[in-house]
Length: 457
Ligand code: FAD
Image (cartoon, rainbow, N blue to C red):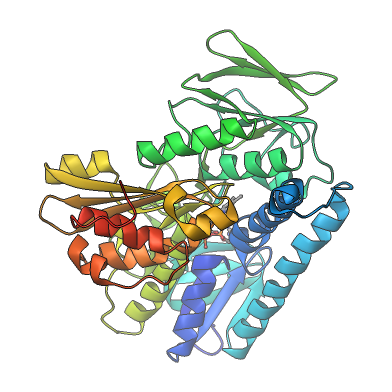
């Protein structure tokens, strides 16, 4: 601060990336000021990862009750008390929020509540105060985007934040966008009993995933009664007394109570003082190198505000990296080629590394093996369907792993170890996977790829 001299680091934004950087920097003995306009924890904790997964878990409970007879258990669903679901969701968020606030306090980080703005390469204003710092970290995150001509009214045409705050189960919903966020809400609402239609302009759900995973998810969603309109762009939407009429480019229409717009998120960088200080941006994204430095040597950026994957675990890793660089350590940059990705719908989709198509492009000849969960004892016990596909360069290391099935999000961390360490299929085939677990499916796929399939035809 001006009075006591500049601090080592001022962080703008207390979300996943900002607080991770602050925590690590403080741990390394740096003086840190963290400026947050809303609540520590940011999108992920309050409007993203955590509350959506609480809803998905509540949805799983509904599905379990609905399927209870399959297990010989007689249970009936008496209804869904959305206030109760909301209280459960909030209790999870509040518990984590208290823990995070305590952690930040314990590390001696000064938290300033307010909207920060860069005024020089080494100074940020917040309210009447000027915080001088050796280094500034931009961690202001992202906000939901919409399409041109499609206005969010936050009542009938809503974004994910509105969707999380809904106090009732809608009778019918159109979800615009078949990415992770769209699929997760579609999954929850379907379990809760809503009529759900997903509209996706590209030809597949989760279009960034391996095509085989997309197809498995599409089959599972259709079997659950979720209507899919794939490869048909939206032409427009009109709100009516009953809700909304969604018009597609092929002239067809879908009526629903709500339209959730889940077409991606854009950087929060307007009004931050970037142009005035000369920080380079591209369509609002703050441009950085692999050390997260902007074109201004004392200013770095991380998380959703820079171009690249918009994921909390990437922001955490970048926060640690930024702090260690500032402390003069020599950390390894983030491995963007091996970022685990999970869509937490029912069923889940998880992957790391290259899709088969991308691997073919990069490596020419490739090998793949697919293991279907139908052969996995634990998956049968859970009544989960899906598959694990492993992709390797011909006679080379594993370069991609793709999974569909309940709880596969818990398996992808091992797959990241495999791709990050450039393990060969035969190396992984040597490892023991406890029986009966879902993790065996990963072992089985590698056994097959190494030319010694066990429970595979
Ligand atoms: P944010 O978490 O957005 O934090 C930015 C913070 O900066 C906010 O708290 C904001 O208030 C503050 N801020 C902004 N401007 C200023 C300013 N001028 N001054 C002071 N403070 C400011 N990712 C996953 O990895 N797994 C998931 O399951 C997952 N699920 C998601 C579900 C949904 C519905 C959404 C919307 C996102 C989800 N994400 C998920 C993405 C994840 O939330 C983001 O990638 C992550 O939060 C990015 O962290 P960040 O630090 O860059 O930004």
